[in-house]
Length: 332
Image (cartoon, rainbow, N blue to C red; front, top):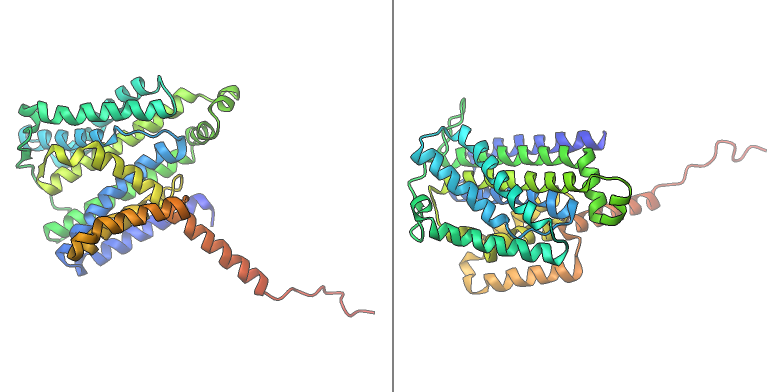
């Protein structure tokens, strides 16, 4: 099977399997799975920027918040339909991301990360200052829940999970299209060597701006969905030191530049704190040990470990397979 075909068929099959299993899960498992799916949307879209282009943006927590507050304003105050508001929130976050990119791409390397950090901190403070729109410290309450999906009879928890999985599926397929496009190839060239890519005539500005806009769009849609599922958002949910850095951790632990690796990172780092909730005194310790272990012993992340294990298995199978004897052997 062609690799690009697998890129589309495998996630579709996994989506169908997850949707089929949803009615058999309890509400708590559905809630955790919904959060994992939303974080996976953020991780996949952020991997397009960090993993394939090599730019570390710390402003994406604020862009996530822009989408969340935009969703709350459009659905609760303007009375918009959720399905119409969802992509519009992504577009609003994308416009904000393009403005951030225009400022940040004037720098490079560490200065790019520091500048986006500053922008993220300013954006986070704006959520406190703009009380008329965001509710300030109190937060934004009364955000309508996502509407029920047609042709399905699910309770709200199951409905939210299916919608989150659908958004993850769309994000993954869109990211796959970008990665296999000429802009995706240009992004990889930029990640490896910007000077060489420029010497080869690659349109650096277009590739990196498209990657940033793509990442910001899906961060905004994830924010709008998060707001609708939570029915409440507050500035603490979009702080750089929490959401901003967690996006980086998801991609690094999952495996940069793989798209599917960050999904595994999102699943692991969402379920681990929930699993260790009964031993809350040790949950942060376990989280820190996990991160330290990946940084020291598995810098390529979960995806790298799985690829290494698969290659080792193929090597053992090749060694164990009997060598075919030539047809002319034994003929005198």
